Image: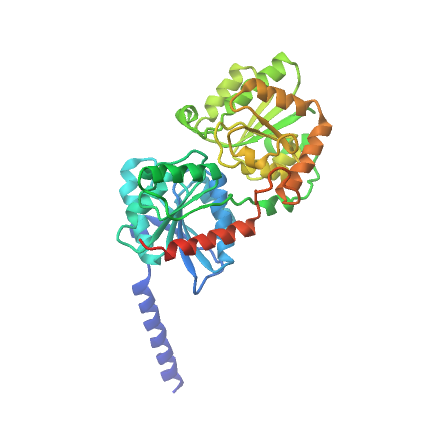
Length: 436
C-alpha cells in the first residue's frame, strides 16, 4: 500500500514537472540571459511594465529606472527590466541582486536592431505587459516596432530639456517630461503639426535620497580617504567636484545636453594660473571623451590640479569630502546632482537656461552662472573659493531645499519620491484605459 502511494505521488510530481517544462520560456534561443535572483514575487500584479535600457551608459536615467523598479515592487506592480549585457547598469543590478534580462547584442550597431526588436517582442508575448516604459528615443523606436499588433501601451519619459517634434513620438501613447518647459514646447510642436499629444504629464525624476540621508560620517580624514580609495595625494585646498558622464567627442560638440567639462577646465586655468588661487578639481564619471579631456587637461598644464576618478559608486562620499559641487552642462533637464549635493550640505553651481534653475536657489543654495560663459563661472566659483562661511551657509540651505523643509524661491517644486511615484502610477492607469 505504501509503495502504491509513493508511486502515485511520484507520477503526479512527474506530470506537474512535465507541464511546467512545456510552458517554460526558452530565453537562450532568443539570445537573452535571465538573472532571476530570489526577490519578492508578485502573484497578481495590478500592472505589468516592461522597462528598457539598451545603451551602454549609466547615469541619472538608470538610477531613476532602478529606484522606480524598487518603488513599483512595493505597490504590486511588476516590472521586467531588459538591459544591455556588461553595461554599468547591468553591473549595478547584479550587485543589488535585482532581477533583469540582458541582451547580448550591441544597440549601437544597427545590424543588431532587428534582433533586439525580436527579443522585445518575445518578452511581450511571454509576459504580456500592459506598458512598455522607455527613457531614450532609440529604445522608444524599438518598443513601437516590437509591439505592433499587440495590446500594449508605450510610455516615453524624456530626460532632456529640449523639445521634441511629433515624428519622435509616433506610436507613443503617453509622454512624460522631467522638464516642464520641454513638456509645454513639445505639446505646442505636436499640436502645430496636427498631432496633439493626448496623454502627457510633468514629473520630476526620482532621487536616491535614502543613500545620502543615511550616510554616516566616515572615520577617515579627507587626505587619507583620497589616498586610500584612489591613490591620490590632494593638498589642503578647496575641492570642486563634478559628477557627470563623458559623452563621445562628436556628441560633446553637437549635443544640446553635453556636460561641457571643458568649460570647467578653462575656468580652472584662469583661477589657478592667472589668479593664483589653488584648488583641486575631481571628475567622477567615465565615457568615450574622457581621454579627450585628459589631453586638454595636460595641454592646459592642470595635471597636478585635476583628477579623473572614472565611474564612482559612492557619490555621497565624494560630495562629503568636496567643498563645491558643479555641473557645467549647456543643457540639463533637471540636475539631480544639485539635490544630492544639498543632502550632503554642499553648495552647487549650474548654468542658466538649464534644469539647474529648478534645483538651485540662486544666492541661497549656490549660484547660477551664465550658460557657457567662462568668465561668469570663474567669478561665481571664486566667490565660493574665497568664502568658506558662504559655502557652509549655502550648504545648509541646500539641505533644506533637498529635504523639502524650505523651498525658498522654488515653491512649485516637489522632490518628494512618494508623491511622484503616485502620480506616475495614476498616469499608467490613464494611459492603459485610453483608446488606441
